[in-house]
Amino acid sequence: MGPKRTAPKTDSTTTTTTTSTASKKVSSKAKNPELEEKRKSKLRKIDWRELMPIGFEFATWSDMKNEKWTFEKLNEELTRGELSKTDYPLYVFMGAQPIVENKIAMNMPYIVVFDCPSPPPSKIASTSIQSGSEEIYDCSKFGLKWAPYVKAKYESAYLKGTPYQIYTLNNSERTGKAISAEKSLALQYLLPYIRIPRLAKDVKKPEVRSVHFSRDVHFKRDYVLKLNKEAQTKAEEVLEKAKKEAEDAGKKYRGPAKPKYTLWAENKEGKHVKRFEFSYNKDVDDLESFTEEMIDDNHIDEEPETLKNWVKEEFKKKREKVDQDFLDMENELAAYTKEQATNYDEAKIYKFYPSHETIDVHKYASGRINRYWGNATKTFPEEIKKDLSTLKKIKEEDMAAYKNLIDKEYLHKEANGDEEMKSVQTEEKEEVEEEEEQDEPEKPTVTTTKKPSKASAKQSKPKPATTKNNKRKEMDPPTEDQKEDNEEEVEEEKTVETSSKKHKTTKNGK
Image 1: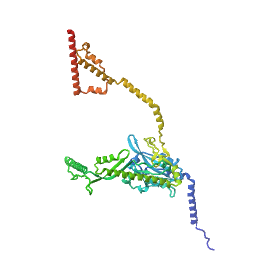
Image 2: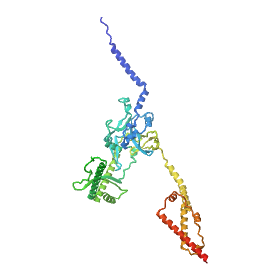
Image 3: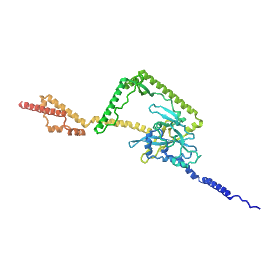
């Protein structure tokens, strides 16, 4: 008999061990749901500094990030609150609200959370403040998209194949690439877009009342030559000043040898053309006077009828654009499925404000998001509601009493007058009486009246109310006019005294 064969122990052992290890891993996950929940909770946290700044001046983004804003309430709601148990992803974007705190203007970030089973459209609105127009584009035009979000420091905790719980409107270009100046300028005029059916019902086709446009305009030759001459003269003055400064400092001038200036170029027809912007509003301007003023004030070498035709053409274009936009909105709403329309109408929109160590954010809270999203379902912190009906009630009840109070004060002042006004009137009255005495010196009534002494006259004369102006007048030296007035008063006093003595002598002689 040959030797008895046995199965290799290594294979059996290895197989058994592998099976045992695999079963342990599965059981480890099954027995630790709290650990799995904690991991998922981490993936729902948001760092607002990692979001894309949209709809505000990009230049303020750096200062805003350096400010001590924190979104504790947002992360609390996402991990433990009413936003923590959704079966579908949440869509998040960031905006900024201008505020003034301690006389310092700044931007305060806020974050909007869209709680809806249907995702928002991959579209963005670009607005123009100057023309008052807006365009709807695909997000890709500006390098944006609704992208899955995981906080940077928790990316290692994300398991491949796990559905993302949060999407943010963010930059679709590669991470770390600097945003160009042109793109940053475009971003500040963008608004996150959605078309909610219940809000669209209230949208009416706007009436075109104004236009803003630019055209190549011919300018009058004399005016252009004058501007060219002024530019040349100014450049020469700057050059001479620079040379003189170098000479006075004992240095050699190393600047340009000739003055630098830009002249208006002529076209082939020998005319001077430049791009010029026009703004016309029907509610403010009359087309006839508008064209005349534009030509005269800006030295435009165009016929009035030409300008009028330009304005009419722009109104026609804008009306066509308004009609097309309104039609596009109707078509967009018609393209919604019944489920999508219902989801949008019943969606919950949350607006979160940050916390700050020294700034009371509560007073700035507002439920308004933008013209497309409307108002938030809920705001954190809640917006302070101002009861205007109470103010109206107070106004109606107290207005009559307040009016009576003002009337009484007015009548009191009118009856009693100011002390200063009274004293002025008394002085004027005494001056008139003195003049009458001088005009009729021979009347017996005048001779029998004994003129009071200067001391008694000073005592009887009412003293005007002391004010800062009076004190200043007493302290300041007399002007030439005041000196002349004083001399005239002295002469009048002498005349009165002479007249009085004459009457006394006549009486004694009789």
